[in-house]
Image 1 (tube, rainbow, N blue to C red):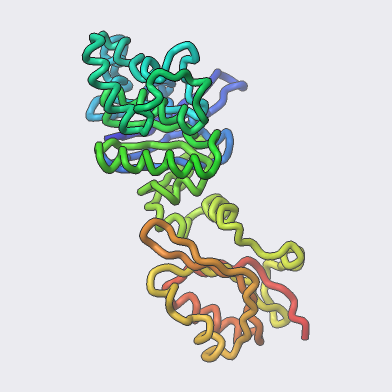
Image 2: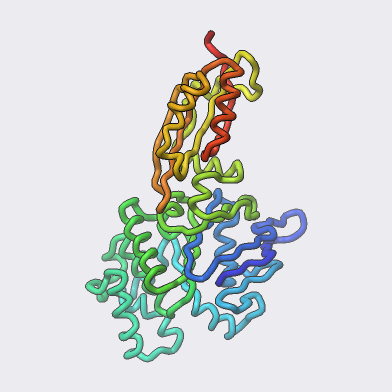
Length: 347
């Protein structure tokens, strides 16, 4: 459905050139919801704007709905864009037009007659829950209602793809939840493929099927959402996850962490449980079988779509031989083990 092949985007030239995207390969299947996350300036917005050629890639190809967008220009490109809807962080509504007329705008530009426009716009306003707001102006609406108008407008041309550029960043958490539910319904009921750019891990957790992590213009990680939240492959992925889960060692302990273990230290570990390991009493078995004490510093359980994720930060207290045995025990079971460092034993 969406295929980016070896896509790069460079602004400027020579010593002042900025490489916003570097050799990005991305495949998004039809009917899926795909999230792209990354730090500010990583290239997220450039990537999504390359999909509908609001930004033309410097190199590489972009294919959407079976059409290679990067080969198109003029009227052919405009026609292809009609099959790609887009919504933005700040709604981009025309303040002098009513809700109805904002949604009707793309159809007017495509040459639809007024009767056809009415037949198309009315059901869209009902779909987004604003059929009673058709005659109102944007200034009379809440932020969430404005974004619903923007979504209806993006759907007016019956797109196969919907691009969302930080579509919930300007909304409060409760409103964000209702907009995400609407996007999920649109994906399920209309079969529209959704590509969304976000810095909010809650958005990815709530509705995405897969997620890609971008850093310095490069795609550094791509995984199913459950896999990403369970065991991110990169350090940046782990940092995003830890920030979202707010699961880090106490500051006092961080200052004491050492990298190299010896006979006078014990390990501090971050454990990620998934699948059957969540409901298995591994920690109590660990304590019995390896003769170690386990000091649990933090722990929580998260529901990631249909998967349950358990997280824990703990100190393993015992002799070097006992803690090494404990590490082997943990690594042999269905959980991810990350050693955060080692601290000096009190004895």
